[in-house]
Image: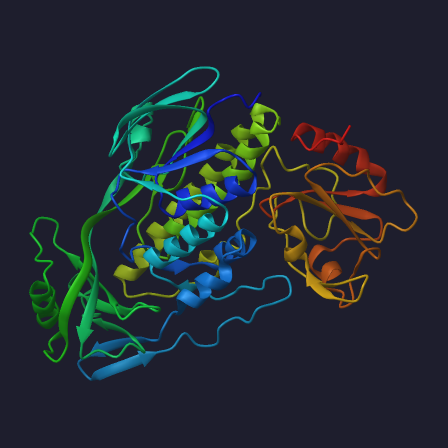
Length: 498
């Protein structure tokens, strides 16, 4: 479509999903506004787990090192029993591999994660607009007209698309009339960021493990001088969220009075929900993050799923605004809604396990195995029997440039472009360049000196892998089938320069 709108995109909600989408759009030179009705950024720790796949996303967005430096690994769990405290370490943690450079989940308070994302967005020339509330919108075949109430009055803004990343109580979703079916899980909990006297910040403290409904815990928040205070609470009881009230609850359930809550920075009481929107899109309005799905916090999946929603949507919006077929946007819901549905099942399963004092977590929480094999964007029927397949996450691998300098596939993939990776094609002609496509040839400009590309991808000489902007394999073909890649790229708006 012609880019003749005042704006390309309005993003409603400046949490982790909205910020991720804004960064991705900024990389694609998309004109947008990021608005939030709150007067200032969120100050709580709520979503504190960063999974390995999200770390890969953050590397691509240019912010992973700052986020890692803002937090740390999960600390050992110290459980207080009748026989005294027992420390349980995570055991032997998986080591990074050439194909999977991030293996260990991070503990980073949500407000620090969002702060680092805002810093990155500022580097790209943009910033959230706080105190700006979306109060209504209308859409037609060409765009969306939004009414935004700002401190200096109400304004009307026209954009090609509107994205609701405005949380579980999403105004955008409700205005669209999209149902949000699911259920309350009948688990009510309090979470607070507190400063504490008398507790070591080297361990995660947990009391009342014999009766999980009467448990209470203090998790040190790396990068701060605070702890995250967590406790289940009855469904129908008012909760005193003052420092004195939280101290009294800790003493009542923990049976010791040498730990005192000195200050409460932020606190919330919530009832856990499991909900999934009936649709992620109506016309030119889309939903992302908690506006589309609501998860219990077990397993640290919600924030990560929301970030990866935005990462999936960003490049597609940019492509359509740059002339790709409108149908490309249909693949957003096609790919992401099944992921949210699976994550809901996993989170509920882990919640039930936690009620039975089982806190074990496996590879399923890392999101490294999330893929889109059934997507209409996955070109199937051409790839080999072994190795990566269409829809798989594209592995990393250390390689050497022809000039002798070491690099990685992730470094070559970094950015909003597509990548075509040829494996030892010999004398076969290399496809013509296209705007938005980078072509690398193993055995040409890149050397697989350690054999890691072959190990991770399973490619044979003369085969090619097409990698999407969000780091998933779109297709694997032989040299004789490169015409299918050419047609595919035409269909997603990656066209030759005329």
